[in-house]
Amino acid sequence: MITLKNDYLTVQINPLGAELTSVKDNETGLEYMWQADKAFWGRHAPILFPIVGRLQDNQYRLNDQTYHMTQHGFARDREFTVIDQTTTQVSLELAADKQTKALYPLDFILTLSYELVDHQLKVNATVTNPAETEMVFSFGAHPGFNLPLGGAMADFTDYHVTVSPKQIYQRVPLVGPYSDTQHAVPLDLKQPLQLNHDLFDHDAQVLTLDNHETTVMLSTPADDHGIALTVAAPYLGIWSPYPKQAPFVCLEPWWGLADDVQATGDLTSKVAIQRLAAKASFKAGYQITYF
Image (cartoon, rainbow, N blue to C red; front, top):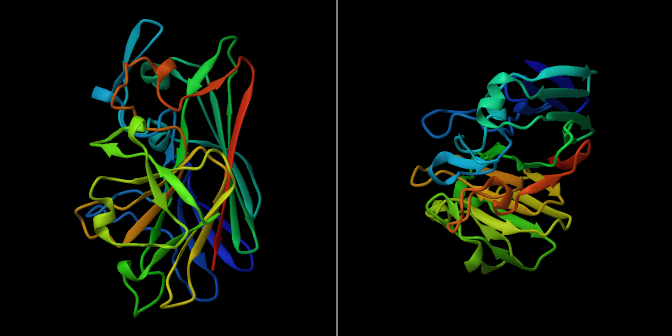
């Protein structure tokens, strides 16, 4: 396990999946991250690559070949290599190999970096295409946060999600595990979204951000602790498993979506797919402030 530490926070990252597993307040010992209780969900903050969400029939076609890949791709279950580390920063890398090419035939280098700055953790990803041909992929993050956050008098339904800018967002419905992008519906987030488990009876709430910088804050009037995630991404998912009464919620920046209900199975025409030219790099990032 990799440990980063400054005056305020101690962070742990597992090289398996380059997964953020713990963020603790040094003074109070408060743990912000979901601790992967398998009774609810056995992960903390998986990295989603080279797909986000589910493929229809867990398969896709590329260059007239059919490949099998399960939800959210394989990066979350692969060992990353540490390429640079200090007391407050680490960079980890995953590159294509024989095992990944059985699932996804393209060359890639995926680099994740985590940097602690005061009360904030900066997370940045770079996808590099070393090949001479175009690369298609999706990328996402899936961090889960404990609820309640240290407030003995608070529970899940005492928390709300405040989105800035305060406006009406387009929400992409999910039909089963698949995106229904043709039937987006307005979601008024001029006021905070009060959390309750029934919000997730059709899976995640998926907001269209259109790459505009957006801050999503998770907090409660019952105490002073919370988190704020800032990102400029195409989409953001808000999720907690249903019908389980799980004591956590995920705030998920996505540069991709689950297959559309009208998906053809061709990866190059997949909804919200990213395209990366030969020898080029794609960059994505977000920041989480803990209070």
